Length: 172
Image (cartoon, rainbow, N blue to C red; front, top):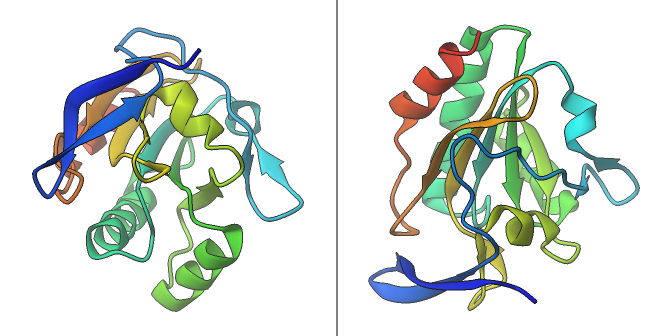
């Protein structure tokens, strides 16, 4: 049975329901199976031994999601080889690849949660009303322990980029 959390987040002031557990700093990050493309999947194991910043966006084709992904793409070049930045959205892999090509984004790994929204449910950020993942940031250490979480209260706002990058830098 899925957990539902209300009064946690909004979209333009309208309440949203998030499905899944409320993860906490110190929790072990749930594993995931996300689509790299239609045939290939990725899991936490694929990024073993690296610090992971997981940037979750509702849809790559919206202004804030676009800006968030571009910002973390810029930051990726400054964080070194022991860090990987993953952007997760419910967009189809085709749309993600098209967007990356058009935006020149090449340092962030885009992964799709379109098959069953399993990431959103496991990380507690699936928006029931839209079947999209709520804008959020998760920083995991090399052992996949969560060291930083930000789940935005308002879907249309930007995350705290400096705090997220600071949390990554504290681990490398």
